[in-house]
Length: 466
Ligand code: AMP
Ligand code: ZN
Image 1 (cartoon, protein in one colour):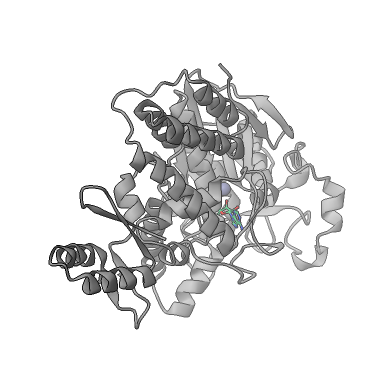
Image 2 (cartoon, protein in one colour):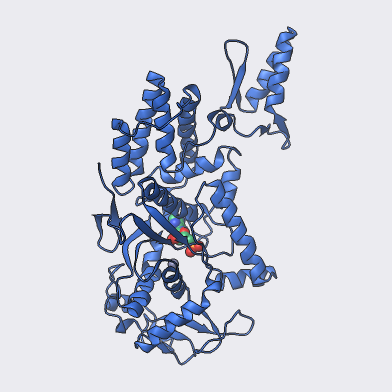
């Protein structure tokens, strides 16, 4: 049996995964800054780490999954101000909306979801340790900075050289810093901004210190896997390493994982480029029953380290493929009991997932399995298809309900909705009364609303979306 190998950004190599404590994994993922709905690029990263957690658990690891919430930040303050809304009201609302989006994408809730504003104490403690070790200093503007030149390993994750980095900084801008690369740990309070009292004076934390403090509280000074989107490598994760290793003088994280971008055209989808779709608007544009899993499938069927372009065609294609899997499970209901994990296709699926979460190969194996199910009509193989899909959070819906999709379908005329089940029943009644004109009219009406009817032997009628 293969064992798991993960690409580690720190070493730029795929390495056998060896947890610190046998059988256990501590995993920390940088979560959202809560000022607005997440876009589908954010959803990609969170879905990737959901897949990682599920696969680790399916492989028998006891995973402690931590994903933080950044609820103090300039963007949050700006948004609250421009909306005339208290900051807590904005962040609470956004956290709740994020949880809804995660549920639609079938993302597991983390074991712990620490919020920055509730960990100010641990952050201040950490800054205190850094100061006592000569790694932090108070700038002329009363902000507290990390002194990058005093931490020898700076740049090791993103493989950047300090001199090159410095050359890219505009030195004059922040005269309060000793070195242009120094970054803020604690920002002195400004009128109208949230602040907390501290030995450094009233203020609020910088972004990077949050993750160092919260990950340490939740997972310890050294833990197994730290994840986030590609863009977080520098400076965020580099700075996390500097803070945590600077303070604790031991390795911070064994494996760094970064998921590639979701792009619009050739550009990263991002709020600042205004080229984004929110996760909820994409799901709501799809079938109400199928949409969440369809988007999840679109986001995860490519490899997590390959960039992915967001297009309607690819999203539709993901829907068609997913419906194909569910159709096989409807035609051949999975057998009761344990799936046969010793089947060669199960082994190939496991090998693919163990090879740095190679979902393109894993889904190709599921395609083969689907073809086998269709060919053999074996409930045991259908059970295996469902079980393997389940290891990574797919194919667990009732196939009949999934393929029917939303019961009320927008017929496209003034937003009117039609009740498909009621119309199917009315058509059956019309046929029994030999009113074939009415029965045909209903079929045509459903057809124009994108519903296909399949009359089964014995008189029953099944329907699905086109
Ligand atoms: P943010 O709320 O902007 O800090 O982003 C939350 C997470 O989403 C981070 O891990 C980012 O790296 C990730 N992220 C942001 N934009 C994208 C994108 N276009 N594709 C994939 N991940 C992204
Ligand atoms: Zn972080």
